[in-house]
Image 1 (cartoon, rainbow over the protein chains, first blue to last red):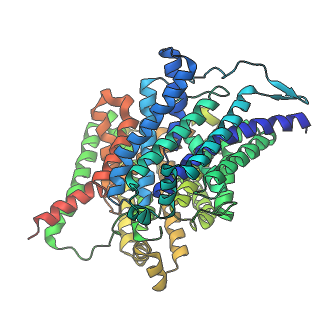
Image 2: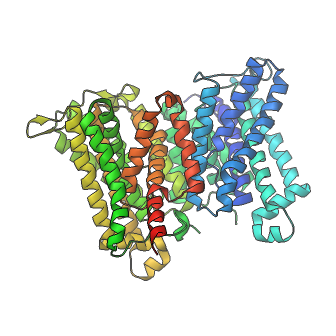
Image 3: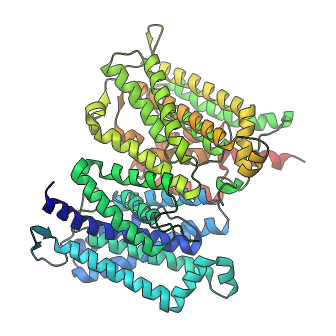
Length: 291
Length: 332
């Protein structure tokens, strides 16, 4: 096996791994705030790319503005999802399985609405900066991959700052540790749930937007991304946002290397097999599950 | 946290004791409604018969799902995998190896149950969202294999030319003959589920649906009965998959996609989870209703998803629960 080929797939694996990591963080943020696993997480990734495309190509907004607006719109959709689907079930004390099924159904509904509003054609976005790839000892480093990696690291750093220093961030962490106790301290647990959905939707949208220039997006790309994000969260120990990011990087690299040997057709099967392996052998993840 | 009775339903489904005569009518009503729909399709034939035929195939699949989820209160998003094994087993053995339908169907069934055993053993130890995601992964892997293993499954192209089922030299290729055969299959399935529900096995299922710890304390081998329930569900799924390919004459990976999973859950919740008649009613209602609004075809998946969310929020016990509620309201 050629060294440059392995290096090449390592770079692309790290890029896609960052995206998986961001989605995984999205799972953890909602799970920590509420104990809910949101199976509609992939819809946010898809919507990020699709809405940016609509704003940029159809409305012809400047690229940067389109991206910013798309992230805000998707965060808003996250809040709507929380209000319309999750909140009514939460207040009715719905069993966990019902919550999972409802969010999965919401995923289908969002998918179909997107299909009706747009169409079933794959869409792509221009790269953020149109510069030829950098050559490093024969390895071509795609500039968009660099954008993804630095962008994701910046987001993770900002998140860490948010959770460590701000009042709201601390309140969200308190909810994760013990919801009842947090409520007794006067933390508005319900608004924290809405905020968690907004944050998680925004993260998903950013991941989707950064990734779209290197691949494509379409109304039905959500579910595989949601599963990859979930796998990242499992590898990192469910409920640990930064574990999820590391898990995403690992998944991305393993998947990219496995594609070298087995071919791109089995990409999903490889990811799912890693998931099953972890679930059967070490369901608490590499770092151990939160709590 | 999730071995509790609340995994599926807020209240565990109890096996009813002997019914009073007054309740017989309320219990028969959904069956009569189902019989009316099937009877209408039998008389009219043609397109309505095709729609109802599909509904009956789904009724068998959902009945299997109901054993695992309704009676045993477990979760599986991956039953489509076993329908795929049965369906592809029948299609491949009859078209490529010239088997007749019965041994092919049995071979598919055996393969599905064997797969369920191998998969179920490690998977069923999981709980909550781990179990949900693991079973979802299994369904998706099966779909992906059907797409990628082109030398056997022909990928997206699918396998066509699967012969219809024949009984004693008489080919069941007409609408009415097919529908009659499917009706018999659904009745047999419902009878089997009803028997299972009232048997020692069904009581064990209900026991571990109520509380795994309590069931264990009573000497019920929880892991064994969970696996048994999973195998039964896989068996019915495989059976419905085989019926599908023989009735349609064609199979492709799209048949066993996530769409199938959501559709079957909608049916289960519309009809009423944990009841014998629920899956049949649910399958008929969910299949027939969209046909009456033809213009809404593009919106079908949307409608299924939205209906499922509304049901989960406002009527988690489905139509069968509605019948039961009417019945208790009438009581003094």
